[in-house]
Amino acid sequence: MSKITKITQQRNKARVNLFVDGSFFCSLMAETAIANGLKENKEVDEEYLKEIILESEQRRAMDYCLFILAKKPYTRFELKTKLITKGYEDDVVYYVLNKLSEYNYVNDSEYAQFYANNCGLKSARQIEQKLMQKGVSSENIKNAVNGVKIKGESDKIAIISAKYLKNKPKNDENLNKLFRYLVSKGFSYEDVKSQIRRYKDDESWD
Image 1 (cartoon, helix red, strand yellow):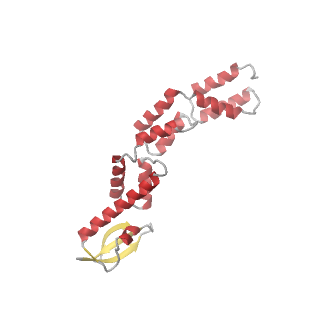
Image 2 (cartoon, rainbow, N blue to C red):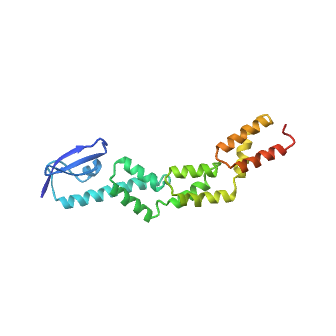
Image 3 (cartoon, rainbow, N blue to C red):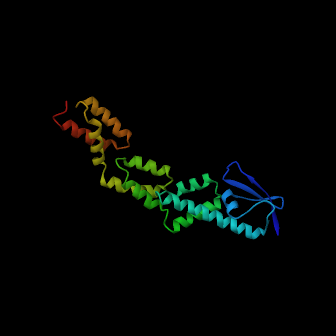
């Protein structure tokens, strides 16, 4: 049998370093050490200790992910970032992410499709940029955004334009401002030009 000789706190206060027989043994979540009754001078079997630490870390990381996933969906990259920030080691992180993927609790393809279909008045380009920030693959982004492009963005442009021009004078100056505003939102020049052309064809405009 071996003995736990020291437990020290890391800079990340959620984690501690475990020393067995005077030598560094591993790092682990502080709550894992507490839950398993690990303390200085306790005699332990090293192989068994490795097993309970790994299983405990995996279980706690999984419980954390399931807890936050119950509130809203996340991409694989977002979950990875959260787990690493909380201090979980890479082997635990990848184990949990793979299990979540296996159970289909995390699915970047479905996430991208859902986001693209429920993004309000965002342009296809804005959707692409947001999904990239969330770590979604280029292929999944392309598949999701293609659906938005096929449906067209003219309705979004029309709604945004109506809101932008509400109570504004009907003149070319405001149309030019609207043009720049829509382009800044990521809408294509051709789609924006079409909307501006419709306003200019309206005889009520100066």
